[in-house]
Image 1 (cartoon, rainbow, N blue to C red):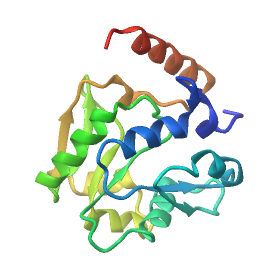
Image 2 (cartoon, rainbow, N blue to C red):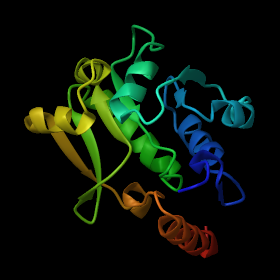
Image 3 (cartoon, helix red, strand yellow):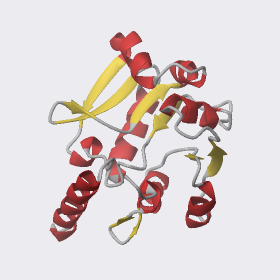
Length: 185
């Protein structure tokens, strides 16, 4: 996209701060942020969050590589991993909270959030299945190989299917944010 996605402004703050604020306030037990080649610019922006930082030093690597970096910092008591992406900054805090609560009730299921029949992010994986990603298996392959364990969770959150990979995506994200901000609470 030509810019550091994590630092793009969304609702008046960098996307990564918006994401972390919602995740941390949703009751997610242990937060790990995996940073890559721009970590020196991003780390100061998130220093006040209760999150550990993992470093993925492989530019252009796959999501499974970042998951592996984060998995190395997980405490033993963890039962699942919520993979949340910074390029989905408008995911509602309630979505993170709902998925975390559902995982506590169904720790052996892959929780795939769905909006209008489309799967999105964040996805929650049982720790045992997430370890496959830590060994290089792409997460979508983990989902396909464990289709019987996938629980599609229909949520009223259009942001779970909205990312910002292109300037056009980012503009659509800003339009969605403006509509959301204009709604009465």
